[in-house]
Length: 115
Length: 375
Image (cartoon, rainbow over the protein chains, first blue to last red):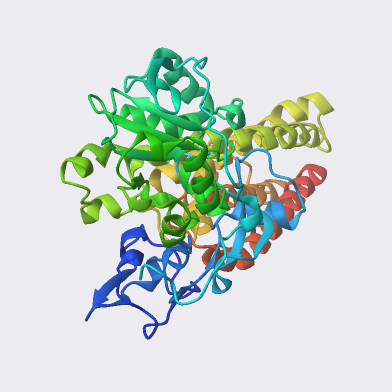
């Protein structure tokens, strides 16, 4: 199953990469692969912007505007509604600043097992 | 890559991390605890890999959204089987469903289970929020006295906890090495037996039929709660206009409206998730549109409005817009339950789909009401 093409914010600075391969390990959609001892983006459109690669990268070579792709959450946030039906009030995290800024949007996450 | 070139603080304020921590152990007085294991840190609650009726019943209720936010276990260290100082340490969230999932995947195994305080939210969602994160993990390692209980310095974490974790920081702050286990708990025995090697299939998040099905109840309950008010409104609106009396109209046209709404909910919140991979289009709203149109045509065929006159034509068109609009909207809401939609993608989808759904809904309602007053 694939979602929309050409939309994700994932970026990889191949110069910074030290080839540890952790992004390959944590990615649930096989977005990365290793080539000549460095990570490359093999399948960008498979990215769901969960942010695992960016947070786990020890040298900040990966950046992505991580967040939860949840329409109900975005609608609730736009209406300024506090979400009670879904356990996961999520947020958009700007990984370009190492996940330091957590911008509350009130979007909901209901990934498998959650809701 | 052990040490990063520059100092980087934790995702959460370092002030959150306490200094020397008191050892706190989970209560032995929890229904699923079947005894305790003596350790240098105290009495560690013992749990079994076999789930009881009460656990299954709890899972069922949580799936239907009943008191789901309070379906928790106390955070801290638990013993599965008869673990010793060499046994693996598995980390999970304090949502009871996550905890049960983990232990039931490990029959006949000895392991320590370290439960993080994720406020009753599952691993993946909590990692996205950061509650299943570096700071909480480091804190829980300390407060459980883990370094006195095991001799090794390795933790096995679910792969889907990765959005919340920076392993190099965990290592620096706690001395423990993070090893990512498989995505699914059921792959843990194979992972452990192979000395911690995960196959590519264990690292891939798929969204099979059964996983989609178990997510339906919660979506359905949410849709029905909102739908109930709309149903009452539609029933009463159906009574307006027309040559017959109010209640006669309501029982004819109003009741059909309620049936149409229920059908739209079934299409959007039940059929679309089930048929997800096979429905045409990538945006979820488009996926929900097709079966919605089909359902509308089937219902209208049964109702059979008189297309020779304007009221019948308007009614026909009205429902042809209303049902697909509702099913597309509900299908779009399933993006949050899916395992592969990106935030950027959902935003793009909504920019076009939401105005269309609102417009179709408004025009459809207008046409239907007009048909009643022209009749």
